[in-house]
Amino acid sequence: MAAIKGDKTIINGKDFNNRPLYRMFSNVPHRYDFLNRILTLGLDQRWRKKAAAVCLESNPGRIMDLCSGTGDLAIELSKNAKPGTEIIAADFCEPMLEMAKHKASRLGFDDRITFQIADAASLPFDDGYFDVVGIAFGFRNLTFKNRRSELYLKEICRVIAPGGRLVIVETSQPKSVILKKLSGIYYSSVVKPAGNVISGQPGAYSYLAHSAKNYFKPSDIENMLKHIGFMSVDYRPLWRGIAGIHVAKK
Ligand SMILES: C[S@@+](CC[C@H](N)C(=O)[O-])C[C@H]1O[C@@H](n2cnc3c(N)ncnc32)[C@H](O)[C@@H]1O
Image 1 (tube, rainbow, N blue to C red):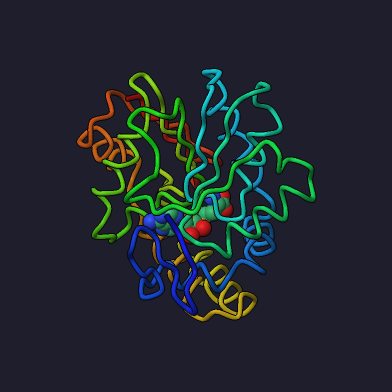
Image 2 (cartoon, rainbow, N blue to C red):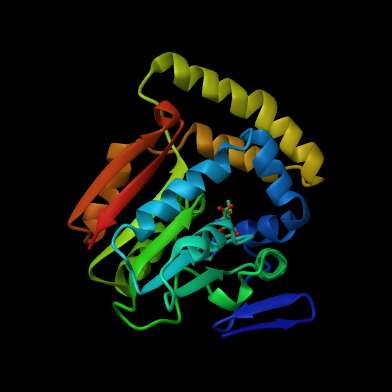
């Protein structure tokens, strides 16, 4: 259960305002979509569309867009999901989810999506509730140098039905040494300074640049997910591995 009390955001009795990631995301929503589009030259939306198509491949009846932020994956899902599909957009950050609600309502998809404030460490759903959980560009936040990483992964696995899938679209590490070097330069010299200035939040885009540049290889993610209990994990690179889609089956 979530509540806002003064300047505190309480979820399941815990105050999230002292969590650095929570504070960071609470301060960027107004510029978040704009920065995504310009810093990826619009590729982020193409990648989410692909991830949404992968989520829908198994014709799921219940899907969660976890770490939904401003709701782009949930909106993409609601464009193509079969009628009656339950689509839940969950995030622990109320200001991001408020943006998501406004956008979904402007685009006419708000009646297809349920918005839920929730921490990935304690999701308010029964075991095996979802056929698919999708995460767009939030998995890195849950797992990069995050001491709660294992807790999040176990919780995500818990809410997926046996045979269900976790679909993750995330920045990745290209195999090509040259491309890896170039993407590193792009993160440090474009994403970090431009993001920090335009968002007005020095630090937010330094974190993005640092975490994306130093993030795990696809094989590390496969090992991490298998260790938690997923049976198989495949990887589909996007843009020669600058990003990628990981599909884990429970
Ligand atoms: C980089 S944004 C991605 C947003 C969106 N999915 C997209 O495609 O742009 C990461 C999101 O994860 C959310 N988040 C981070 N840690 C979380 C947690 N422990 N539980 C729930 N949401 C979390 C943040 O609030 C933020 O909205």
